[in-house]
Amino acid sequence: MVNPGQVYLARVTLDVNRTWALFNGGVNAGLDVSLDGEVVEAALNQTYTGTITNDNPKDAYTLDLTQGQQLVVNADATSGSLDTLLILLDPNGQRLLDNDDRAAGITDSTIQATINTAGIYTVVISRYGQVIGGTEGAYSLGINTGQQVASNATPAATDGTSATPIVTDTTLPAGSVEVLLTWNTDHDLQLLVRDPLGNSVYDDAAQVSSGGILGAVGNQNCNRADGTPTSYVYWPATRTPPAGTYEVEVWFQADCDDTSVNTFQLTINAGGQQIFTTTQTASLDNHYMVTFTINADGTPVQTPGEASFFDMDNIISGIDLTAALAGEVTPILYDQVTT
Image (tube, rainbow, N blue to C red):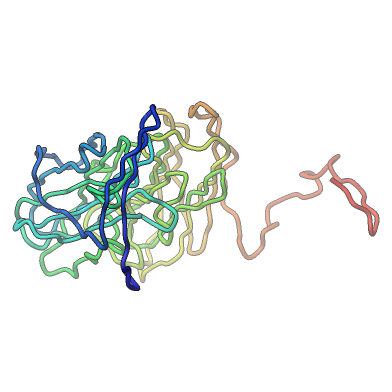
């Protein structure tokens, strides 16, 4: 009998000879945090790879962490059907956090936490259902840390959902596409990257189905961390980004009672090459936009689109529509269909 809120899981395997086997599971089998295999001593700001199979349903990595560190762990499936699961164990081996799906419709996993007690922590990567699960495949595991948070600071959330990584440019994970925004004031600037599918990565949507991830956000809601305010959006190096045109927008959304002049630097890398960089001075509520294009093979078009500020309250300001539409306007009659 399965009651409301319970989940029953079993696995069926079928080989090339059409011989099948049923592995009976159970109801709410729970998280298996026993470390009965090889444990890797991991280093921070590194990426590890491995494979989850029916014979190897989990891998474990240990980390020596200090009080106040911000920990960000991203598990991304790179082949097969793998539906990743991340578990973080505290120095006593007790479950601290776990995450199955990074967001709705995204079966990769992310854990974000502020470390309150120094010690050896363990990251376990597995799959949905763990031992009785059925998904298999290779994974990429990015383990990163950001700036120290003072012991008297308000800690970030540790429920695996709402904490935001605050990292410097020396700790940013490498990507096939990298968009970096930095500035040196208390101002709150929003970085938004829209992929060719129309999905946007920004501080309210930290992950999209094409693989884009918000790796850092600076001065969010006027909360200033030590160091250079940094926002960063990337597509993991292990994934080919979707082909097409990307939009990058910088929005000066709040001055945070800082009356100084805002100057920001925006840099875009793709395919291991810098394709755009600029330094701009912005005023409150300014929007700055640039586009770039990725080819089907993952390489960038070397020349980005036109970059400029635009006025959201007066969209056509600065645009000569007569010149822009010269020779392209087609008359249309009432009740006529055109394509």
